[in-house]
Length: 186
Length: 186
Image 1 (spheres, rainbow over the protein chains, first blue to last red):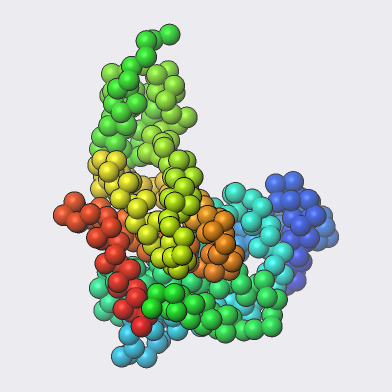
Image 2 (image 1 turned 90 degrees about the vertical axis):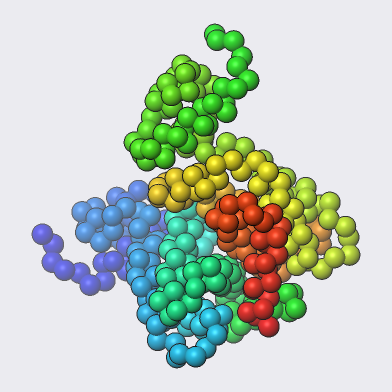
Protein backbone atom coordinates (compact mmCIF):
# COMPACT_ATOMS: atom_id res chain seq x y z
CA UNK A 1 0.00 0.00 0.00
CA UNK A 2 1.42 3.36 -1.08
CA UNK A 3 1.67 6.06 1.54
CA UNK A 4 -1.06 8.68 1.73
CA UNK A 5 -0.52 11.43 -0.84
CA UNK A 6 -2.59 14.52 -0.04
CA UNK A 7 -2.11 16.01 -3.52
CA UNK A 8 -3.06 12.85 -5.43
CA UNK A 9 -6.77 13.56 -5.86
CA UNK A 10 -6.11 17.03 -7.18
CA UNK A 11 -3.36 15.83 -9.54
CA UNK A 12 -5.75 13.19 -10.87
CA UNK A 13 -8.42 15.84 -11.40
CA UNK A 14 -6.06 18.11 -13.31
CA UNK A 15 -4.69 15.25 -15.41
CA UNK A 16 -8.19 14.00 -16.21
CA UNK A 17 -9.37 17.42 -17.35
CA UNK A 18 -6.23 17.87 -19.48
CA UNK A 19 -6.83 14.52 -21.18
CA UNK A 20 -10.60 15.01 -21.60
CA UNK A 21 -9.95 18.37 -23.30
CA UNK A 22 -7.21 16.92 -25.52
CA UNK A 23 -8.91 13.70 -26.61
CA UNK A 24 -12.56 13.83 -25.57
CA UNK A 25 -14.05 12.12 -22.51
CA UNK A 26 -14.85 8.85 -24.33
CA UNK A 27 -11.27 8.36 -25.49
CA UNK A 28 -9.55 8.50 -22.11
CA UNK A 29 -9.11 5.63 -19.63
CA UNK A 30 -8.59 5.72 -15.88
CA UNK A 31 -5.16 4.15 -16.44
CA UNK A 32 -4.15 6.99 -18.74
CA UNK A 33 -5.33 9.57 -16.21
CA UNK A 34 -3.24 7.90 -13.50
CA UNK A 35 -0.19 7.76 -15.81
CA UNK A 36 -0.49 11.43 -16.70
CA UNK A 37 -0.68 12.27 -13.00
CA UNK A 38 2.41 10.12 -12.34
CA UNK A 39 0.43 7.71 -10.17
CA UNK A 40 -0.45 4.03 -10.25
CA UNK A 41 -3.79 2.86 -11.66
CA UNK A 42 -4.82 1.50 -8.27
CA UNK A 43 -4.29 4.97 -6.78
CA UNK A 44 -6.90 6.33 -9.19
CA UNK A 45 -9.46 3.87 -7.86
CA UNK A 46 -8.62 4.75 -4.29
CA UNK A 47 -10.05 8.21 -4.97
CA UNK A 48 -12.64 7.77 -7.72
CA UNK A 49 -15.08 5.02 -8.66
CA UNK A 50 -14.64 5.73 -12.39
CA UNK A 51 -13.47 8.47 -14.77
CA UNK A 52 -16.90 10.13 -14.69
CA UNK A 53 -16.56 10.63 -10.94
CA UNK A 54 -13.44 12.74 -11.43
CA UNK A 55 -15.69 15.46 -12.84
CA UNK A 56 -18.47 15.13 -10.27
CA UNK A 57 -16.68 14.17 -7.04
CA UNK A 58 -18.01 16.21 -4.14
CA UNK A 59 -21.29 17.06 -5.86
CA UNK A 60 -23.17 14.66 -3.57
CA UNK A 61 -22.55 17.21 -0.81
CA UNK A 62 -24.42 19.96 -2.65
CA UNK A 63 -28.04 18.95 -1.92
CA UNK A 64 -27.53 18.72 1.88
CA UNK A 65 -25.50 21.95 1.77
CA UNK A 66 -28.33 23.73 -0.01
CA UNK A 67 -30.87 22.34 2.47
CA UNK A 68 -28.73 23.70 5.32
CA UNK A 69 -28.49 27.12 3.68
CA UNK A 70 -32.30 27.20 3.33
CA UNK A 71 -32.67 26.25 7.00
CA UNK A 72 -30.42 29.13 8.03
CA UNK A 73 -32.29 31.85 6.12
CA UNK A 74 -34.04 34.10 8.68
CA UNK A 75 -37.73 33.46 9.28
CA UNK A 76 -40.35 35.83 7.92
CA UNK A 77 -39.09 36.05 4.34
CA UNK A 78 -41.40 35.25 1.44
CA UNK A 79 -40.78 31.77 -0.01
CA UNK A 80 -39.46 33.17 -3.29
CA UNK A 81 -36.93 35.26 -1.37
CA UNK A 82 -35.82 32.19 0.58
CA UNK A 83 -35.29 30.39 -2.74
CA UNK A 84 -33.38 33.21 -4.43
CA UNK A 85 -31.24 34.06 -1.42
CA UNK A 86 -30.32 30.41 -0.86
CA UNK A 87 -29.42 29.72 -4.48
CA UNK A 88 -27.35 32.89 -4.64
CA UNK A 89 -25.45 31.88 -1.49
CA UNK A 90 -24.89 28.34 -2.75
CA UNK A 91 -23.60 29.64 -6.08
CA UNK A 92 -21.25 32.03 -4.30
CA UNK A 93 -19.78 29.08 -2.36
CA UNK A 94 -19.63 26.86 -5.41
CA UNK A 95 -17.83 29.37 -7.61
CA UNK A 96 -15.03 29.64 -5.03
CA UNK A 97 -14.01 26.10 -5.93
CA UNK A 98 -14.88 26.17 -9.63
CA UNK A 99 -11.39 25.85 -11.07
CA UNK A 100 -11.21 25.37 -14.82
CA UNK A 101 -15.02 25.59 -14.90
CA UNK A 102 -15.13 26.52 -18.57
CA UNK A 103 -13.13 23.47 -19.65
CA UNK A 104 -15.16 21.20 -17.37
CA UNK A 105 -18.36 22.60 -18.83
CA UNK A 106 -17.17 22.03 -22.41
CA UNK A 107 -16.24 18.42 -21.62
CA UNK A 108 -19.68 17.78 -20.12
CA UNK A 109 -21.47 19.49 -23.02
CA UNK A 110 -19.73 17.19 -25.51
CA UNK A 111 -20.86 13.93 -23.89
CA UNK A 112 -24.50 12.72 -23.65
CA UNK A 113 -23.55 10.51 -20.69
CA UNK A 114 -22.05 13.46 -18.79
CA UNK A 115 -24.92 15.78 -19.63
CA UNK A 116 -27.25 13.14 -18.20
CA UNK A 117 -25.18 12.97 -15.02
CA UNK A 118 -25.21 16.76 -14.79
CA UNK A 119 -29.00 16.88 -15.09
CA UNK A 120 -29.36 14.20 -12.41
CA UNK A 121 -27.22 16.36 -10.15
CA UNK A 122 -29.35 19.43 -10.87
CA UNK A 123 -32.53 17.45 -10.17
CA UNK A 124 -31.15 16.34 -6.80
CA UNK A 125 -30.57 20.00 -5.95
CA UNK A 126 -34.11 20.97 -6.92
CA UNK A 127 -35.49 18.10 -4.83
CA UNK A 128 -33.41 19.18 -1.84
CA UNK A 129 -34.64 22.74 -2.26
CA UNK A 130 -38.27 21.62 -2.47
CA UNK A 131 -37.86 19.50 0.67
CA UNK A 132 -36.15 22.28 2.60
CA UNK A 133 -38.91 24.74 1.69
CA UNK A 134 -41.45 22.19 2.80
CA UNK A 135 -39.62 21.95 6.15
CA UNK A 136 -40.03 25.73 6.49
CA UNK A 137 -43.79 25.33 6.11
CA UNK A 138 -44.14 26.16 2.41
CA UNK A 139 -46.93 24.00 0.93
CA UNK A 140 -45.81 21.32 -1.54
CA UNK A 141 -47.25 22.75 -4.81
CA UNK A 142 -45.74 26.20 -4.20
CA UNK A 143 -42.44 24.75 -2.94
CA UNK A 144 -42.06 22.64 -6.06
CA UNK A 145 -42.88 25.47 -8.45
CA UNK A 146 -40.52 27.96 -6.83
CA UNK A 147 -37.73 25.39 -6.53
CA UNK A 148 -38.02 24.46 -10.22
CA UNK A 149 -38.12 28.06 -11.39
CA UNK A 150 -35.27 29.04 -9.05
CA UNK A 151 -33.28 26.03 -10.25
CA UNK A 152 -33.81 27.05 -13.88
CA UNK A 153 -32.53 30.56 -13.22
CA UNK A 154 -29.60 29.13 -11.24
CA UNK A 155 -28.58 26.84 -14.10
CA UNK A 156 -28.60 29.65 -16.64
CA UNK A 157 -26.83 32.05 -14.27
CA UNK A 158 -24.12 29.49 -13.51
CA UNK A 159 -23.47 29.07 -17.22
CA UNK A 160 -23.29 32.83 -17.66
CA UNK A 161 -20.94 33.20 -14.72
CA UNK A 162 -18.59 30.68 -16.36
CA UNK A 163 -18.82 32.42 -19.73
CA UNK A 164 -18.06 35.90 -18.42
CA UNK A 165 -14.87 34.56 -16.87
CA UNK A 166 -14.73 36.14 -13.44
CA UNK A 167 -15.56 39.82 -14.02
CA UNK A 168 -18.68 39.55 -11.89
CA UNK A 169 -19.42 37.54 -8.76
CA UNK A 170 -22.00 34.78 -8.97
CA UNK A 171 -24.59 36.73 -6.92
CA UNK A 172 -24.27 39.65 -9.37
CA UNK A 173 -24.85 37.40 -12.39
CA UNK A 174 -27.68 35.58 -10.61
CA UNK A 175 -29.43 38.82 -9.55
CA UNK A 176 -29.24 40.11 -13.11
CA UNK A 177 -30.89 36.92 -14.41
CA UNK A 178 -33.64 37.16 -11.77
CA UNK A 179 -34.15 40.78 -12.80
CA UNK A 180 -34.58 39.73 -16.43
CA UNK A 181 -37.21 37.12 -15.55
CA UNK A 182 -39.01 39.61 -13.34
CA UNK A 183 -38.99 42.29 -16.05
CA UNK A 184 -40.25 39.78 -18.65
CA UNK A 185 -43.14 38.62 -16.46
CA UNK A 186 -44.36 42.01 -15.30
CA UNK B 1 -43.84 -12.93 -40.84
CA UNK B 2 -47.07 -12.16 -39.01
CA UNK B 3 -49.58 -9.98 -40.77
CA UNK B 4 -49.75 -6.30 -39.85
CA UNK B 5 -51.80 -5.74 -36.70
CA UNK B 6 -52.81 -2.08 -36.30
CA UNK B 7 -53.77 -2.53 -32.64
CA UNK B 8 -50.57 -4.29 -31.61
CA UNK B 9 -48.58 -1.22 -30.51
CA UNK B 10 -51.41 0.01 -28.33
CA UNK B 11 -51.99 -3.43 -26.80
CA UNK B 12 -48.29 -3.66 -26.00
CA UNK B 13 -48.44 -0.22 -24.38
CA UNK B 14 -51.41 -1.14 -22.22
CA UNK B 15 -49.92 -4.52 -21.24
CA UNK B 16 -46.57 -2.89 -20.38
CA UNK B 17 -48.17 -0.29 -18.13
CA UNK B 18 -50.28 -2.96 -16.42
CA UNK B 19 -47.18 -5.04 -15.70
CA UNK B 20 -45.00 -2.08 -14.66
CA UNK B 21 -47.68 -1.01 -12.16
CA UNK B 22 -48.11 -4.57 -10.84
CA UNK B 23 -44.45 -5.58 -10.51
CA UNK B 24 -42.29 -2.49 -10.98
CA UNK B 25 -40.46 -1.53 -14.18
CA UNK B 26 -37.27 -3.44 -13.28
CA UNK B 27 -39.11 -6.73 -12.81
CA UNK B 28 -40.80 -6.94 -16.20
CA UNK B 29 -39.30 -8.27 -19.45
CA UNK B 30 -40.22 -7.54 -23.05
CA UNK B 31 -41.24 -11.19 -23.44
CA UNK B 32 -43.70 -10.87 -20.56
CA UNK B 33 -45.18 -7.71 -22.05
CA UNK B 34 -45.69 -9.47 -25.38
CA UNK B 35 -47.26 -12.49 -23.64
CA UNK B 36 -49.66 -10.31 -21.69
CA UNK B 37 -50.67 -8.57 -24.94
CA UNK B 38 -51.19 -11.98 -26.58
CA UNK B 39 -48.39 -11.34 -29.07
CA UNK B 40 -45.07 -12.93 -29.97
CA UNK B 41 -41.82 -11.59 -28.52
CA UNK B 42 -40.59 -10.65 -31.99
CA UNK B 43 -43.73 -8.52 -32.46
CA UNK B 44 -42.69 -6.46 -29.44
CA UNK B 45 -39.36 -5.67 -31.06
CA UNK B 46 -41.04 -4.72 -34.31
CA UNK B 47 -42.57 -1.75 -32.46
CA UNK B 48 -40.17 -0.90 -29.64
CA UNK B 49 -36.39 -1.02 -29.22
CA UNK B 50 -36.71 -2.00 -25.55
CA UNK B 51 -39.19 -1.91 -22.65
CA UNK B 52 -38.17 1.65 -21.78
CA UNK B 53 -39.25 2.80 -25.22
CA UNK B 54 -42.82 1.63 -24.58
CA UNK B 55 -43.16 4.53 -22.15
CA UNK B 56 -41.43 7.14 -24.31
CA UNK B 57 -42.33 6.17 -27.88
CA UNK B 58 -43.35 9.24 -29.86
CA UNK B 59 -41.60 11.69 -27.54
CA UNK B 60 -38.89 12.29 -30.16
CA UNK B 61 -41.55 14.18 -32.11
CA UNK B 62 -42.10 16.70 -29.34
CA UNK B 63 -39.05 18.97 -29.83
CA UNK B 64 -39.74 19.56 -33.56
CA UNK B 65 -43.46 19.99 -32.78
CA UNK B 66 -42.66 22.64 -30.18
CA UNK B 67 -40.30 24.40 -32.61
CA UNK B 68 -43.09 24.48 -35.19
CA UNK B 69 -45.56 25.90 -32.67
CA UNK B 70 -43.06 28.66 -31.80
CA UNK B 71 -42.60 29.44 -35.50
CA UNK B 72 -46.36 29.82 -35.94
CA UNK B 73 -46.86 32.29 -33.08
CA UNK B 74 -47.71 35.69 -34.61
CA UNK B 75 -44.89 38.22 -34.87
CA UNK B 76 -44.73 41.17 -32.54
CA UNK B 77 -45.23 39.34 -29.26
CA UNK B 78 -42.72 39.72 -26.43
CA UNK B 79 -40.36 36.71 -26.16
CA UNK B 80 -41.84 35.63 -22.82
CA UNK B 81 -45.31 35.59 -24.37
CA UNK B 82 -44.04 33.48 -27.26
CA UNK B 83 -42.62 31.02 -24.72
CA UNK B 84 -45.72 30.83 -22.55
CA UNK B 85 -48.18 30.65 -25.43
CA UNK B 86 -46.17 27.92 -27.17
CA UNK B 87 -45.77 25.78 -24.06
CA UNK B 88 -49.44 26.12 -23.25
CA UNK B 89 -50.39 25.03 -26.78
CA UNK B 90 -47.98 22.09 -26.71
CA UNK B 91 -49.33 20.96 -23.36
CA UNK B 92 -52.90 21.18 -24.64
CA UNK B 93 -51.94 18.88 -27.53
CA UNK B 94 -49.97 16.52 -25.32
CA UNK B 95 -52.71 16.08 -22.76
CA UNK B 96 -55.11 14.91 -25.48
CA UNK B 97 -53.04 11.75 -25.80
CA UNK B 98 -52.04 11.37 -22.16
CA UNK B 99 -53.89 8.16 -21.38
CA UNK B 100 -53.17 6.65 -17.97
CA UNK B 101 -50.84 9.58 -17.32
CA UNK B 102 -50.93 9.15 -13.55
CA UNK B 103 -49.83 5.51 -13.69
CA UNK B 104 -47.15 6.30 -16.25
CA UNK B 105 -45.87 9.09 -14.02
CA UNK B 106 -45.76 6.80 -10.96
CA UNK B 107 -43.80 4.16 -12.89
CA UNK B 108 -41.27 6.76 -14.04
CA UNK B 109 -40.96 8.28 -10.55
CA UNK B 110 -40.07 4.86 -9.09
CA UNK B 111 -37.13 4.20 -11.44
CA UNK B 112 -33.87 6.24 -11.53
CA UNK B 113 -33.27 5.04 -15.09
CA UNK B 114 -36.69 6.28 -16.25
CA UNK B 115 -36.39 9.56 -14.38
CA UNK B 116 -33.10 10.11 -16.19
CA UNK B 117 -34.77 9.39 -19.55
CA UNK B 118 -37.58 11.78 -18.65
CA UNK B 119 -35.13 14.57 -17.83
CA UNK B 120 -33.26 13.98 -21.10
CA UNK B 121 -36.59 14.37 -22.90
CA UNK B 122 -37.35 17.60 -21.03
CA UNK B 123 -33.88 18.96 -21.84
CA UNK B 124 -34.42 18.26 -25.55
CA UNK B 125 -37.63 20.30 -25.36
CA UNK B 126 -35.87 23.22 -23.69
CA UNK B 127 -33.12 23.09 -26.32
CA UNK B 128 -35.69 23.10 -29.12
CA UNK B 129 -37.46 26.05 -27.51
CA UNK B 130 -34.19 27.98 -27.15
CA UNK B 131 -33.33 27.32 -30.79
CA UNK B 132 -36.78 28.32 -32.04
CA UNK B 133 -36.64 31.57 -30.08
CA UNK B 134 -33.22 32.23 -31.53
CA UNK B 135 -34.72 31.72 -35.02
CA UNK B 136 -37.28 34.40 -34.18
CA UNK B 137 -34.46 36.83 -33.43
CA UNK B 138 -34.33 36.50 -29.64
CA UNK B 139 -30.71 36.81 -28.50
CA UNK B 140 -29.13 33.65 -27.09
CA UNK B 141 -28.80 34.63 -23.40
CA UNK B 142 -32.41 35.79 -23.17
CA UNK B 143 -33.70 32.83 -25.23
CA UNK B 144 -31.97 30.35 -22.94
CA UNK B 145 -33.19 31.98 -19.73
CA UNK B 146 -36.81 32.23 -20.86
CA UNK B 147 -36.81 28.69 -22.27
CA UNK B 148 -35.44 27.27 -19.01
CA UNK B 149 -37.87 29.17 -16.83
CA UNK B 150 -40.78 28.35 -19.14
CA UNK B 151 -39.73 24.70 -19.16
CA UNK B 152 -39.63 24.64 -15.36
CA UNK B 153 -43.16 26.03 -15.13
CA UNK B 154 -44.31 23.57 -17.80
CA UNK B 155 -42.89 20.58 -15.91
CA UNK B 156 -44.63 21.55 -12.68
CA UNK B 157 -47.89 22.40 -14.46
CA UNK B 158 -47.88 19.08 -16.29
CA UNK B 159 -47.51 17.25 -12.98
CA UNK B 160 -50.34 19.28 -11.48
CA UNK B 161 -52.56 18.62 -14.48
CA UNK B 162 -52.03 14.88 -13.97
CA UNK B 163 -52.71 15.12 -10.24
CA UNK B 164 -55.95 17.06 -10.56
CA UNK B 165 -57.28 14.33 -12.83
CA UNK B 166 -58.99 16.19 -15.65
CA UNK B 167 -61.09 18.86 -13.91
CA UNK B 168 -59.13 21.63 -15.60
CA UNK B 169 -57.56 21.88 -19.06
CA UNK B 170 -53.78 22.06 -19.32
CA UNK B 171 -53.82 25.75 -20.35
CA UNK B 172 -55.84 26.56 -17.22
CA UNK B 173 -53.38 24.74 -14.95
CA UNK B 174 -50.41 26.26 -16.77
CA UNK B 175 -51.80 29.81 -16.60
CA UNK B 176 -52.40 29.41 -12.87
CA UNK B 177 -48.77 28.32 -12.36
CA UNK B 178 -47.50 31.27 -14.42
CA UNK B 179 -49.69 33.54 -12.31
CA UNK B 180 -48.14 32.16 -9.12
CA UNK B 181 -44.60 32.77 -10.37
CA UNK B 182 -45.55 36.28 -11.49
CA UNK B 183 -47.16 37.08 -8.13
CA UNK B 184 -44.14 35.74 -6.25
CA UNK B 185 -41.66 37.81 -8.25
CA UNK B 186 -43.51 41.11 -8.17
